[in-house]
Amino acid sequence: MAGSRGSRDAHDLELRLLAFYGIGPVTANIFLRELRPFWLKADPEPLPMVAGAVAASVGIDLAQYERKSLTFIRIEAGLIRLRHEHGQRVPVVATQSAVQRQG
Image 1 (cartoon, one colour):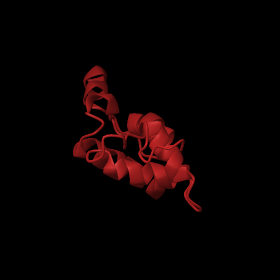
Image 2 (tube, one colour; image 1 turned 135 degrees about the vertical axis):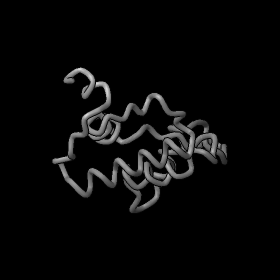
Image 3 (cartoon, helix red, strand yellow; image 1 turned 120 degrees about the vertical axis):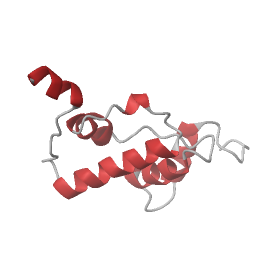
C-alpha cells in the first residue's frame, strides 16, 4: 500500500484483512471486534444486524457503552450468539421503561 507498512486508519486495516484469501467481511469484523480494545486501529462498525434489530429487541442501547471496551465487545458477541440461536425470531424482552408505561 504505497510504501507504508502500517494501516492508515481503521478502514484501511479492514481492507488489508479483506485482501487475504478466504477472509470476508464477517470474519474481518469478528477478528477486529476482538482486538478493538487492544489495537488503536481495530475499530470495526458493529454488524448492522446486531446494532439494530437484535439489540433493540432485547432493550440494549449500544450507544451507552464505550465501543473500545471489553464490555461492548462482549455484549456485541452475545447479541450475535443470540441471533444465531434464534435466527430471525429473536425474543423481545420488555424493557423497564416499557413495563412502567404499561403498569
